[in-house]
Length: 293
Image (cartoon, one colour):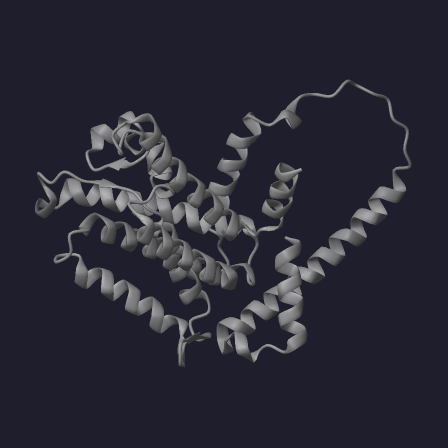
């Protein structure tokens, strides 16, 4: 019964909240398993963290993604998940879960590549022993994506409103300033890589190109390799009326195109005048559209 309730509540979460739940679960497992088995605290994470050495990376290429699910402490986890939660709510009012994952995962990958390349190109990092963990690159990607796509949208920060592009600019400048002085240069490199991906993705989308479409198809292809639905069903002979489905398909396509045109018009209005310029009906329509996708 309890397992059924957990599954029910998990299924009701949006993709950002599911991502948070997964990160929290990994954090708990990564802390408990080594402790209970009397192992070194890094005995589990060492197989999933992203190493700075290129040849070590080739031995565990999966770490280019898996590093993002591990965190160095509760504070590290808390602030990353808080950012994903709040920015995710804005993002998912504009786009569906698939695009959220595209931006997030590509941000994680770009952040990881920035880290590895930075430590193997710039002399300042030569000889340093480092590895990368944390969801910061993915969180930076979705933040900068939103700040670029709807830059004039205002959000409430404690006592006053601030435009999103101010927040994005502050975050990027903070990483650039801290890069030479903090003890977390690798983390700041990853943040900048994720931020660059988020900016590039949003700019291209505003121009009508979804740079994550190919990545999404690749992920679908990999998942389909393990999908039971790919098994061929026994051959059956079925007689049906061919006219009716064609008519219904035409109506469905028309409705879908009309709905997409309205969504595009609302998003265009947001990019020009900000989210607050929408009417209540437009906000409600956009919210429902995001939930249905």
